[in-house]
Amino acid sequence: MDLQKIQKALRDKHIDGWLLCDFRNRDYLAYRVVGLNFEKMTSRRWYYYIPAKGEPRKLVSAVERMRLDSLPGKRMVYLSWQELHSSLRKMMGPKKKIAMQYSPKNNVPYVSMVDGGTIELLKSLGYTIVSSADLVQMFVSVIPEEGYRTHIEAGRVMDRIRAEAFDRIRSAVRNNTGATEYDIQQYMMQRFKEEALTTYDPPMVGVNDHPADPHFDTTKEEARVFKKGDTVLIDMWAKKDVPGGIYYDITWVGYIGDNPPAKYVKIFNAVKAGRDAAVKFVKEKFAKGETCYGWQVDDACRNVIKKAGFGKYFLHRTGHSITEETHGNGVNIDNLETKDERALLPGCCFSIEPGIYLEGEMAVRTEINMFIRHDGVPEVTGEVQQDLVLL
Image (cartoon, rainbow, N blue to C red; front, side, top):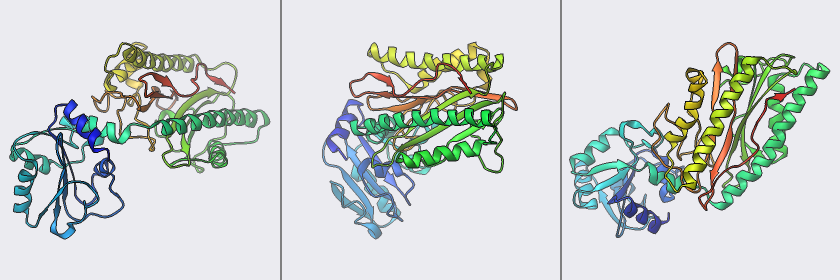
């Protein structure tokens, strides 16, 4: 925990303090912010208050009085719930603006860890509660230079494996080997292992209407054999199997044959145009020195697809945060499922992945990753699909 940096951020945002709390390991973000071991079970409520200036303070149960001993600050101990309430007021002092893992109207549910009763309690004690969403992003989701390097290295390997997978499909069709979606998925998993990559879940490989379900699950039992005239989607995510490795997450699409259907070409061009509009928007915002919010980037992409007539078939947010988890806790590119009001910051990594899903027929998604370099320059971190892969 970088206490001085946290306190400076609080002062910059005109917030009097940040109250981190937990009960039974519900808020893993709090543990990550202060550097506590989340695997160690906590059975009683604890509170850690970081003021914008001065020494932090901690409030712990008499049953687990040493739970926060690894953190700086004066310790207070409560026994009864009445003591807990009075100690909170004493710990934080006069009425103030306090950041907590809370989001007004649940706009950013990824950080809404504090229960409603605790919010009610703090408000009854006279405190104004504001969201810690931006603070969480700064101190949990911003990627250091070494993490950025691992992301780039994973991307180079995965772009190569992605090309190999499409080549394998092409060869299977030409030689009539009977290869299935599952076979290609397992081939990619073997290549991940050979290249020292790790992933929490296997890639998605689907033909025709299978990927029209955005989270289609490739299984051995339901796998189809590749054949001429199939549309193909491959969604893959992995990271280097090293401490602090950052995921790389991409989706490419192709067609088995020389003349893809006009509708397939049309929706591919629509999602490509939406993707490129989002990238352009981010780059222009940073070039002008303007704040760029996740919901704005979603709008820039989604409006293009709406204009093309496919808005109702774009079923999900435009992109998500990427960290050591595929879906991280930083800003998402979203003004559909949520309104992500967080700003893109130097050190943020995220996907841009518009899709059009025609149920029972076909689907297209094109997914790239972007990183806001530490010098404030946005970049796309890997290869970008410009044309359908013809197989």
